[in-house]
Length: 95
Image 1 (tube, rainbow, N blue to C red):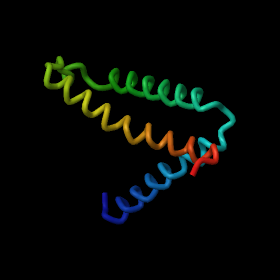
Image 2 (tube, one colour):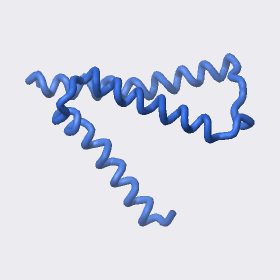
Image 3 (cartoon, rainbow, N blue to C red):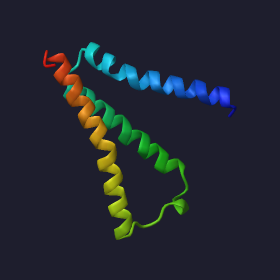
């Protein structure tokens, strides 16, 4: 990947993340349905990925691995949770 194409991909990614709030506001579904759809898509994508990748690449998780996995999940969930609260507060007229 050249630096120019990497910069283009970075801009496209930033645009996609920036538009999620707009698309969420314009969606005709409730937030619970949208979140369920995203979670279902993630589960299906991970299931396909786990079938494609060789089983030899996976290992049994030990106790320290579970701690790292939990820390990663919390650090990923926190920004999405606060983003969701910000979108809801903005939409309800609260400044």
